[in-house]
Amino acid sequence: MSIRENIFNIQKEIPDKVTLIAVSKTKPLQDLEDAYECGMRDFGENKVQELMEKYDRFHKDVRWHLIGHLQTNKVKYLVGKVHLIHSLDSIKLLQQIEKVYSAENMIARVLIQINIGKEESKTGIFEEDIENIIEEIEKCNYVKALGIMVIIPKGDVESNRFYFRKTKGIWNTLSEKNYKNVQMEYLSMGMTKDYKTAIEEGSNMVRIGEGIFGQRIYN
Image (cartoon, rainbow, N blue to C red):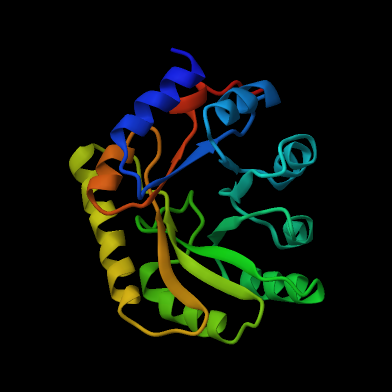
């Protein structure tokens, strides 16, 4: 199926309140253009360098999402270019974001990435460390946390549902608290193979790459 058909079919299946992010990593600009012509304005990239290259050469009304691990030395390249950083995964990274954005007098919009399955292969903070990072976010003047992002362990539908439900429970708990710099606006969970289950369990932001653009080609 074409990119247009893929987007149309996905949009039929997701409620209006759910933001669809087209994950365009490794894809050429022509593929992004096809998605743009279908009305897509939210695009996700894993690597800072690729996001920067596409930012400079693509439509300026696009909202770029950095969804991959962010190294502290790369934060400076994102200022003024990225709509949402999905991968705040340590206090060290938080402090660097605060430092870099304060120098430019701009606000960084971030999601707290939780490693819900405690997998060694994934970044993200553990559930029991959430309060620690929130305490640090509350000290910031240039960082606003707008929700949670999660990448769950690979598994079957029931396993997926367990982790999505667990994450939504954390999101609900944080939603009930009053913070200065933290609010639960976005719950970014669900990708190509599991986004329907994620939405059933409360996700309002899904990140879909192969389901829109087809299989990735890695050199």
